[in-house]
Length: 258
Image: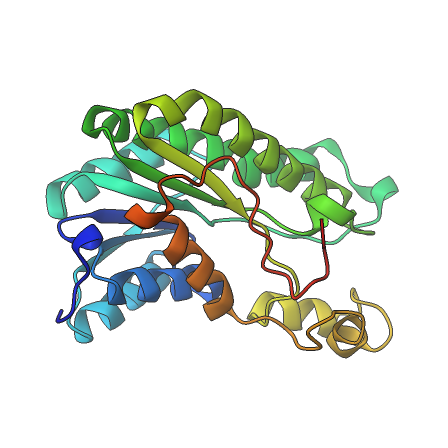
């Protein structure tokens, strides 16, 4: 691709949950910046479609069927990524599930299922890829969290708890890997216009007025887009962001101001 910035030359990025929504936008943005992209998604067909779109635009990408709640699947995806693209020094932990349920109705299986993807998946993918970043003396890990972890979210106690774990994990790993040249940051989105958000609206989970009622309380007065999140991730993985680590970069239109 023309105009590739120096930071991106020969760098490989793994983006989990890259088959749709925010993940797909991140894949396209990093590819446009020159990185080769390994699109990991539980939906292998969706991962392949994202990768094919990037290739059609002149980039390098592969789509892989990877279940981030299964370490064997992660390890297999990493092996394929190493073979087909090279060593990934950028990891975006985006894969996640965001179910709605009343607290009293969340059983252990439902709680564990959310934690397995959102919290443990982030941990496992980072643990699988970080050693190669440390060996290279350079790496970027960006964890997609949620503003629900910062404000709380009715009908999503298990989801908010899992994303709160992601924030704590981010800060802790940043302290451990910082001396080795690896930065770790989190981006917690809020009300991003994805099929998942519209599905929640259609099912009444967002309350009366749906998305519009929430937008009215956000300072910038609009719903976010996947591209908004992708832009923040693109900054955090650059060389210029090497002095930024352990940070929570809220992309939420002002819903959370700290």
